[in-house]
Length: 165
Picture 1 (cartoon, rainbow, N blue to C red):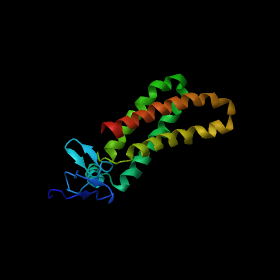
Picture 2: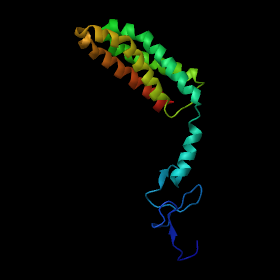
Picture 3: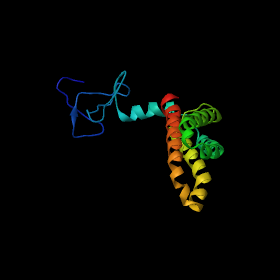
Picture 4: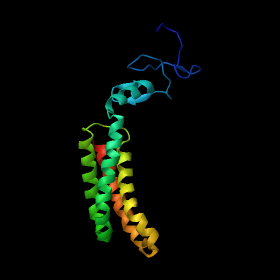
């Protein structure tokens, strides 16, 4: 850059800047800059790098949904019988589900795998319990323990598939 030459942001053409993306060299303003451990980058370069990290295929989402639904259906009668003890069963079921999903999809990472697996667990419980709740409204207070179980199981799935892996 020549002395006195003014650069303008590649994404905001009216904003003058002296900052450049350290990957592609485009001029970027403070609003477009993303701080990374190696310096400032534009959002496009950051998105391109993240795309390499998430390597799950579309079929993996279906596999995750079916696996979580099946495990949720298997765990639902157990949770229905345990009541208070669902507090301890929730993390166990969540951990088993997350581990099974992770192995079944070939240890690939997907941006939304955690959400699909959580939804499968919730759907498994609802498919089992909803007819009972509708048939016998006096069982509705037991829904509290179902909610506790679901919160514990889903938080474990999220922790395992989104943050740990």
